[in-house]
Amino acid sequence: MNRRTLTTSVAALASAVALTGCGIGNAVVGVHDAPAERSNVAPLNVDGAENVASRVLDAAVAARAAKGAEAAKAQGAVLADAALAQAQAATKLGTVAASDPLQSKSDPQVVAVSQGSKWPRAMLVGTLDEASRTQTLHVLMSKAASDPFKVYASVPMLPGTSVPALGDLATGTPLVAPTDAAGAPLAPNQSLAAYAAALAYPKPVASKAVATKDAYATALRTSAAAQVKSLGKLATFTQAHTPNPKFTIAFRLADGGTVTFGQLARRDVIATSPAAKELVIPGTYSKLVGKTKAKKSLTITSLENVVMVVPAKGAATTVGADEQMVSATAE
Image 1 (tube, rainbow, N blue to C red):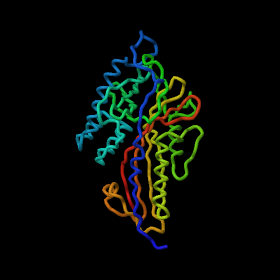
Image 2: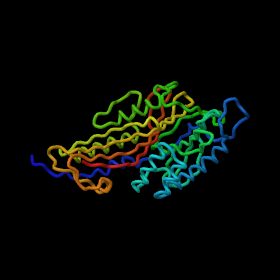
Image 3: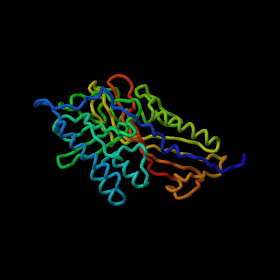
């Protein structure tokens, strides 16, 4: 067979999901006034938590809209961990994913506040985008008395999903260590690692403890299959997902399970076969790579923010996800 030039579109890889949806669901505890003093209480009452959430999320929206040096300063002041990594990637590329939740101000609803007066202190907050009817879950956290609350994660929920009850707002919801499996089949980091392994292509590692029928996993499989079909025998396609254990945050559910926030790094690699002379890089990526053709391969790196519900019994499920492209390289 003659060696041929491979021209293919890989634009779908950077936007596997534009499928976020509603809802936090009826199972989530509603907002109500705090009762009398208790021995185990949340460090913030409902009004105080809502005021903090409104202020921090408004500042986060402004920081996400900032440009250049101003963006770096503003984002670092109000964002951290997964949320900051996503914002920095979007600012560097000059593009914001359609699913990015911090694009417009909204009225926050406090879903849970961490238990006890010690640090770190955290709250789980829900917002609703009226135009798209998309619910987003945000984690706000303060790690020390001198540390202001910042947004650590903001993840749109997937269509048809909900978060189970977390307990009474006034009592507070315990934070769960990333390696703590007490009350659930998997520790938070274990659930993220199992989900990442199950998303791999072409050799996923299935686990009975983690379901992959959610809309995000389905979109990834559909995108990968379409990519492989378009490449034919001219190139191979592989996809790997790697969780960042430093960015894991989890709250204890009322049933003993967890709602876990995490971030995965995804690497999509298209490698030319002996049948192809070169890979013509689509314009979306050629600007990042700095050239229009690759002799051996094209690698695209993206950040994936996910929210998983790990029940006390049964398989863990993903209820929220979005992604942000970080970089593209070619050889």
